Length: 262
Ligand SMILES: CCCCC/C=C\C/C=C\C/C=C\C/C=C\CCCC(=O)SCCNC(=O)CCNC(=O)[C@H](O)C(C)(C)COP(=O)(O)OP(=O)(O)OC[C@H]1O[C@@H](n2cnc3c(N)ncnc32)[C@H](O)[C@@H]1OP(=O)(O)O
Image 1: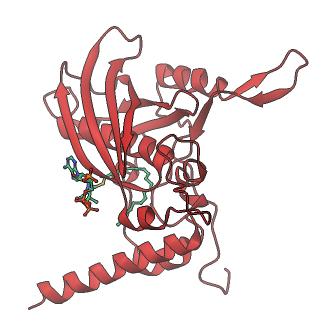
Image 2: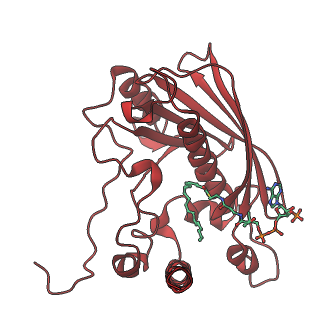
């Protein structure tokens, strides 16, 4: 055992295949994964248009500088979609983004703990996966965001255990706001299960600090500036932002305790 309590551990990436994945889930994972890397005529491997985003079960633990404080302050916190231990019982999903097209696709297999109507996925679980995919997409494009608005239209029920595709696309950006559209379809695209639109709002702190030294805004609605590269993976967040978020969460917790104990 290490004498140092904050020794970094290797995070588990929850978006990699596991034994619960159906053959369809596995097939689609391989399909998009193959698009992440291309082979030239000379046999050289180059980056493809798509990129798989890793996924962890805690939001700040793996941010640079976040993992130390998160052991103290966020011991029991878990990302909602990754908090069921049993493989295949909850949300099994993997997210891929296409940087050039500013689109995003998630391969989603819904487990038995997500039941709503008998044999079908709960509407809240569908909204959750949509929120997670559009939130991840907006974060990739614009930086750390909060969902300000999510409008969901349920068109046809999703059978439990089935695999569906969650497509997210960028409609526009306006100041701090990123507007996205989302469709949940069958894997062959023939059936529309759910349609949604959402507005993700860049966190005030990030907005306030997203100015380059030359006075130009570096916020990145066009997905081309620095934040698109640094935000999708929490690992790449600046440590100061991680520490600040942890402190905000800690203070918030302390205030809540103070007010509920009287
Ligand atoms: C604690 C910090 C957490 C930070 C997270 C950091 C990193 C994330 C990292 C990785 C993410 C990876 C994966 C994502 C996975 C899951 C995603 C889950 C996402 C969620 O599950 S997240 C929880 C639910 N979410 C909330 O809990 C938000 C509660 N809310 C607020 O925190 C405020 O409401 C806020 C911040 C949204 C805005 O507040 P504010 O004070 O900063 O700014 P303000 O009100 O001025 O709005 C600015 C402009 O947005 C327009 N606007 C505002 N609200 C609107 C609405 N509803 N409809 C249409 N437009 C709206 C205004 O009209 C104005 O527009 P304009 O600039 O044009 O005037």
